[in-house]
Amino acid sequence: MEDEKTHEMTEHNEKMKESLEHDSKLQGVDHTFLGEKGSWEATLDDAQAANAHEHSLTVRSALKAYPFAVAWSLIVSMSIIMEGYDTILIGSLYAYPSYAKRFGNFDANTDTYQISASWQSAMGSGPQAGAIIGAMLNGFVIQRFGYKPAFMIGVGLMTAFIFVSFFGMSVELQAVGQILCGLPWGIFATIGPAYASELCPLPLRAYLTAYTNMCFATGQFIGAGVLQSFLNRHDDWAWRIPFALQWLWIPFLVVGAIFMPESPWYLVRNGRYAEAEKSVLRLMANHEKPHAKGLVALMIHTNDLEHNISQGTSYFDCFKGIDLRRTEVGMVVFLGQITCGAQFAYSATYFFQQAGLASSDAYKLNLGGTAIAFCGTIASWFLMRHIGRRTLYLSGMSGMAVLLFIIGALAIETGKEATKWVQSVLCILWLLTFSLTVGPVGWAIPAEVSSTRLRSKSVVLARNGYYLAQIVANVIQPYMMNPLAWNWKGKTGFFWFATAFLTVTWAFFRMPETKGRSYEELDLMFQAKLPTRKFKKYKVDAYDTGDRRVQEA
Image 1 (cartoon, helix red, strand yellow):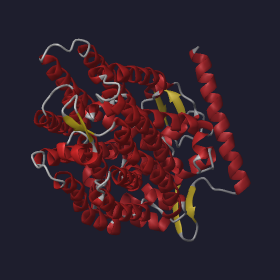
Image 2: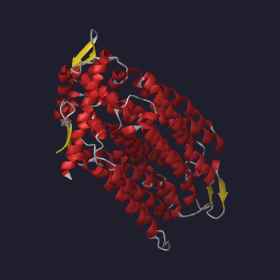
Image 3: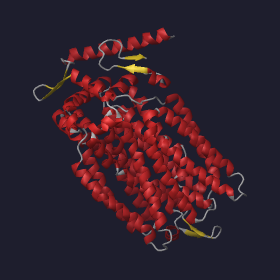
Image 4: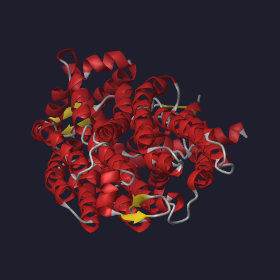
């Protein structure tokens, strides 16, 4: 069996070598030369040296070598704070007394104002509908014009559309405002992880892409604190001020949009090698700058390698050949952030209230939960340094499935006063588990697993798959929880347990381990169609000219 596997791998590498030699003869390409003769030149040795240097970097040395890459990744990803802020804002405003009174109807059974489940679904799903459009357009804008113009467009749209939510005094206008705000959120959510993955070296890649999850958690933490502070205010300003506070981020994002460097990978894909080197120099500390040319050569070599494997760069190309598997992994991993029960746990304030807790207690628990989620996201960086993506994802998803099942089981017996508090604590434990595992890994994998030529579009597809699932979840979740609809309350946990269990099953058979792999290594591993559960057991030498490029260690 092992001999047969070795024979297949040798045969694959020989075919790949023949293919590259054939292309060289047809195109007259010297594979020891990279760039454009007479304008910007480098050699394959430069690329190989850069690859070895990048693998030799530790997290600490990479932070010292690329301080400005880290800074710009942090600044651009900060835009995702606004999406996290608004996510918890809308999900929690349903239970906000002044908001429910303005846009809902009085329910004699509960002696409170309730926004109907249909309008809750519309306002909850509106941002995702807008985000899908924004993300798809963003894929075209990045490919044609780059990350910088796309980010500028997002900031401009965000500034304008906040006005609709702030001044909208009908439930219809509130829904429209959320749809429009979704457009720039789709742009920000797909720029953040893709931009970070293209600026940062290998040791920092996972941390800076996962940082987007911390931005999301930061927004939710801020939103929960803002809502708590205005809870005792009973006029319309109690909900209008939280909307207005979103404008505070705009000046910082405008400055970032003006001065941010363009992605060197984008410049390489467009043959602008000298500009790519200048962009790389802007990201490095002085002692690292001698490696700039070699790093651009490495980007060119990776781009050429992917061009030989698959020449297309459209959305359709994401579903062709070996890119189909890569797209599947990116999309389903991101989708897991919904199937793990996020709509249930992240509308915790409404759940706490429907479970019988007072509004003040519900919002305090929600604030505590978001604080724990924020701390969990920071702690996840230390876990990702030592534990593989696959292990983190599988263990986290399994843990959340168990918690959801227990929450559902406790809802069967509703007579005990302590039950609602136990369910609430389990929801907070769910938030901690999510922020330690599936949350950060879900942001890191789509940007990491995709080919560099299709990265922006692969991230868009993964995020849009997430948004579509979120729309479905936002439609059904209010009906499951609302006392005027299905009134499942805690039994909703059984539904999300089932979806989480299915995701665990998929991840076990289909999610590969990508920790510590460069982009060109992943290109060769996916092309070799390695078994999912044996990914980490193979070693790759992208510069081997023989038949040992991909082999089992």
